[in-house]
Amino acid sequence: MATLSIINPRLQQLYEWWLNNHAGRKFPSRADVDPIDLRFILGNLMLVDVIGSTPPDFRIRLHGSNLVFRHGYELTGKMLDELPLVEQRDRARQTFTTVVSTGEPLHGHRDQVFALRPQQYETIILPLSTDGANIDTLLVGLIHDDEK
Image (cartoon, rainbow, N blue to C red; front, top):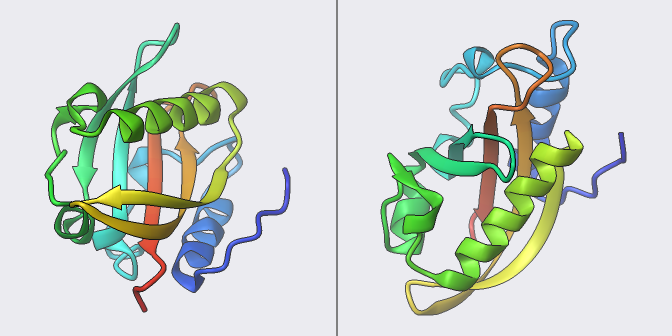
C-alpha cells in the first residue's frame, strides 16, 4: 500500500483508524464504523454505498452535517446522479470507481466551487467491505482548507 501525504490531522487520524480496523481482513467493514470512534470527524464524513459492479453506481448513505452546510445541498439517501453539479458528480464517480476497482485508499487535494464559492479541500476515500473481499461501502473524509 502506498504512503499517503495527508496534511490534515483529522484525515490522518481517519486513515489510521482505517488501517487499525481490518481485524485480519483485507478491509474494515461498515459494521466497524462506530460514530463514537469517529466523533472527531463525523460532520465531515460521507458513507457511500456501492451498488453493482460493472460499472458500479453509488448511493450516499450519509452526507455529514458540516459538508451539507459548506456545500449548500443535502445528499443523504440520494444517488450520486442527484448531485447537482455535473463536474463534481463526474469527478466523484471517477474517484469512487477507482477505489472500488483498485481496493486502495485514494487521497487528494482539490479546488472546487461549492455554494457558488471557490473552496479548497483535502479528501480521503477509504474502502469498506462486509465480506472482507468485495468493496460495498466507501468512507469519505473531506475537510476544507480553511477549517481548523
